[in-house]
Structures are given as C-alpha cells and as structure tokens.
Amino acid sequence: DGGITQSPKYLFRKEGQNVTLSCEQNLNHDAMYWYRQDPGQGLRLIYYSQIVNDFQKGDIAEGYSVSREKKESFPLTVTSAQKNPTAFYLCASSGNTGYGQPQHFGDGTRLSIL
Amino acid sequence: GESVGLHLPTLSVQEGDNSIINCAYSNSASDYFIWYKQESGKGPQFIIDIRSNMDKRQGQRVTVLLNKTVKHLSLQIAATQPGDSAVYFCAEMQRPGGYQKVTFGTGTKLQVIP
Image (tube, rainbow over all chains, first blue to last red; front, top):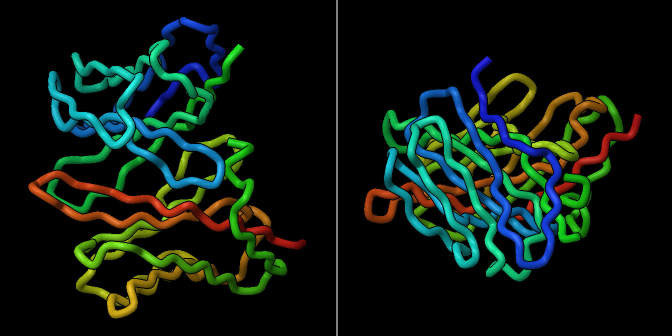
C-alpha cells in the first residue's frame, strides 16, 4: 500500500542531544512537509520541500534542520537549540499535479524530553 | 496523539444522529478547503475537499458546505457511528507567489454516544 511512514513512533531526547525523525513516502509525491502539533493548536509548519535538494523554512524553523537528498525521504533533525521540543511531529506529502492537492500524513512521532 | 483532543471544543452526538462540525476560516483569498479526521495517536486522515467555485460537495456519508460570504465551512456526517469519534479539523489553502500555503484549524472533538 502507498503511504507515508514515520519512525520511531516514540522518541526521547536528553538535554543537549540532537535527534532525527524519519519520514519515508512511496506515493511518488514531489512535495513533503514537517509539522509540529501541540495540544489545542493547529498544525504549525516547520519546513517544506517542493523538490529534491531544495527545502524552505516554514513558520517555526528555529531549532530544526532537514535534508531532501531523495524524493522518498525527508528526515527532520531536532537540534539542542530547540528549547521546547516536546510535541507530536507530523510528516506529510502532496502530489504535484497542479494546485489544490490535499496533503497526506504519516502517523507521527511523539518526542519527549528525558 | 492522545493529548491532541485536550482543550478543544467537543460535540457529543448520539449514535445514528447526524453531526455538524463547523469551521470559520480566516483568509478571503483561500480557494481550496479540506477536512481531516484525526484519531488518537494517529496522523490526520483526509476526508473530503472542496474548491471555492463550489458551495457543496458530497462524499460517502459526509457533506461539506462552503459559505464564502461569511468565510464558513461545515462538515456534515450522516448516521454518526462510534468509529467517527475523533478530532476533526479544517484546512484552508492559498497560493501566494506560487507556493501552496495551508493553514490548519485547531479542531473539534466529536464524541459519539452509543
């Protein structure tokens, strides 16, 4: 089945540590996105990529980094500079067949501080 | 995940009744709208979408209504079932400068009473 796979499902970070969240899609989508979800808030965009080897900052990029070396993969690194990393992280992708394509989401990674 | 539903408005509906979930969107330039369903511990799941040149669209047991005059979107679920219990949120999309900008609502929690 085509879809988006995020791993791990749960992740714990120690002080000063960088952690990387994995996102893989087999939908052949060009665009991929990372969102952060906090209780009572709408999804907030961290980074997005519309094509391989290119990505752009979203609304809350500080303390995060990404790479897009392959079409299928868009890993997110939460760096030690992100002082409040505890959240539910969602990866999404969308097709590139014109404007107005829904984003499809993975099942998320819940990151907590040890 | 589990904490997504905290602090959200809640709609309680008897099983078999119809549900209506409302969403006020913010940007008059938005021209594409999506409803998502998010179950506890999972990523958002696409339900139905509608473009601004329409005011109604029907799917299987779901109908989306769009009122551009008052910037209001609603999701109607017919014959609500226990499996419909989840958080529902809307998303609006614009295309400033060629990039697809999506803004997500905070969501409504639907509780189905058996």
